[in-house]
Length: 156
Image 1 (cartoon, rainbow, N blue to C red):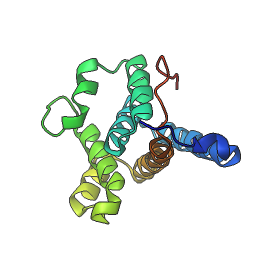
Image 2 (tube, helix red, strand yellow; image 1 turned 90 degrees about the horizontal axis):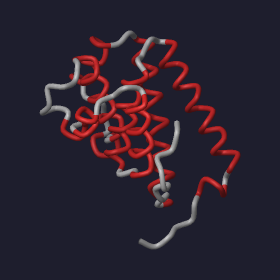
Image 3 (cartoon, one colour; image 1 turned 180 degrees about the vertical axis):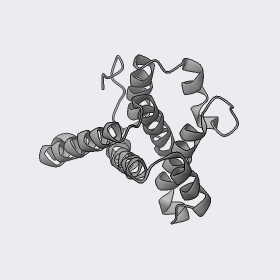
Image 4 (cartoon, helix red, strand yellow; image 1 turned 30 degrees about the horizontal axis):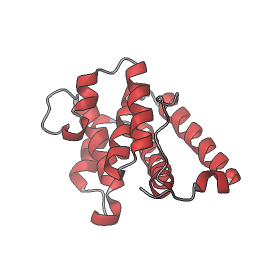
């Protein structure tokens, strides 16, 4: 693959603001009582859907560090068919997919929204939306730049 311009170093101030937004979204999720492992699963699935190899690599490493199993990470792409995920995790993954696919669907379907509200408080729902929104931004920056994999997984 041909190398591309790395957009992050070209706009360091914008990237710093995105990092700050990411930190804020992570803090909101933690403050709302959302488990770190669930946040990592959502970041992985969002990154899978966007084809962001850099972010998938980074967040699978982070999820394993938090105690997530290889099997659950390996089957995340087919989570609907695997009985390894809780109702809460399924709600989060469905919401992540709906938000990530907005350009195609132009909506979050009512059943996905209702499932999310059954699994999360309004505060938790908002935190999950912010996590997915921020990760879609990170994925777009990495994908358009074809950010290469580092020699070893990145620490989050």
